[in-house]
Amino acid sequence: MKTITTTTTNNKSSWWPKLIIAAFVSFALLIGNMVRQAMQTDVDLVSKDYYQKEIAFQKHINQVQATQALNGQVTITLAAAAEQLSLVFPAGTGTDPVAGQIHFFRPSNAKLDFTLPLQLNQDHQQHIPTNSLAKGLWRVHLTWQRQGQDYFLEKIITL
Image 1 (cartoon, rainbow, N blue to C red):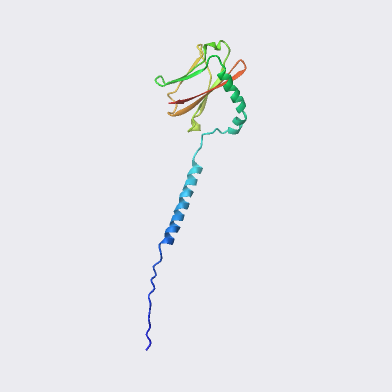
Image 2: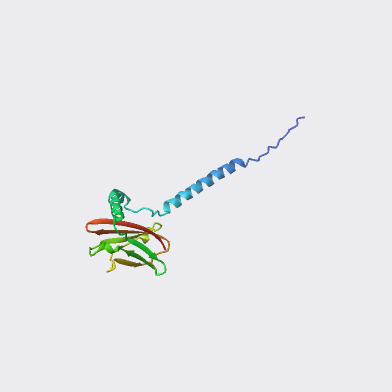
């Protein structure tokens, strides 16, 4: 008589291939999410007209050198208790007209940037209230012209 032998095969599959595939898929999803977040993030650390400003950089260097060569320096002082920023020009400014502007630059949010005209009083000062400004780091750029010469001063303030 013939005996029929049946063997049972163990149909267990290894879990390693599934784990490796899951790791690759998880990594791809992580990288895809990081790329999506990077594409949606606003970067306001440089101005929109960066290239035009780069071309005019030599003019800026000349303005800074002229400012450093002044007999009396312009001071920008933050009075936190009074909630105001004071610009004080030296007494030697005389009666010569001074024209210029004050640019408030917020590195973390370009939407908060604004520019004010330079309007000095009889004491060659200008006081700007800071109570409406957002708290944090600000760069104050002061540009002015006097007797045909351009000047530039930058001050970093934290409110």
